[in-house]
Amino acid sequence: MFEHILIPVDFSKKNEAALDVALDLAGQFDSQLTLLHVIERIEHLDDEELRDFYDMLEERATDNLESMAQRAVAQGIRVDRVIEYGKRAYEIVRYAQDHDVQLVLLSSRKVDLTKPVSANLGTLSHQVSIFCQCPVLMVK
Image (cartoon, rainbow, N blue to C red; front, side):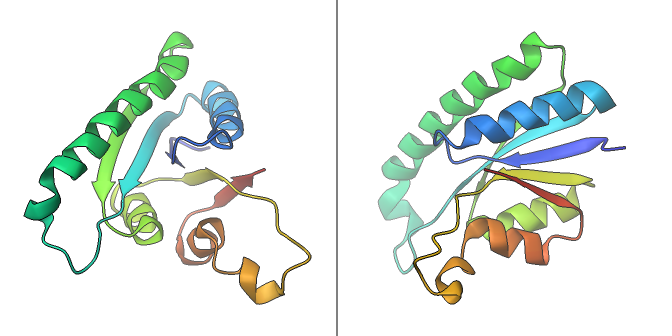
């Protein structure tokens, strides 16, 4: 059913629940998993000025992706580790479209009902769920 599952990660604790669900689904459907981390560029600054900073972020992301991927590897699940640069929502949607992803599975924070509805509509998970062409499963 889901041959390719994309899991966008930011390495926060909430990603663990999304990874747990992804591992369960991948085991059931013999799915390929892709762990995607997007490093956001700082606008209006030259990338070369920040090269050392971006290199450090990429090295840290590589280590964290490898740590997360080991859980899948230990269960015999195929997993790719991908780092992209850009705006998170755009890069997640673009990657899903360009790589024939059948399901995007991402962590979502709980909605704060004390805030106006419009304050909760700008979340990453909300943006991805609107613009993604494939199904999106949000895990809290």
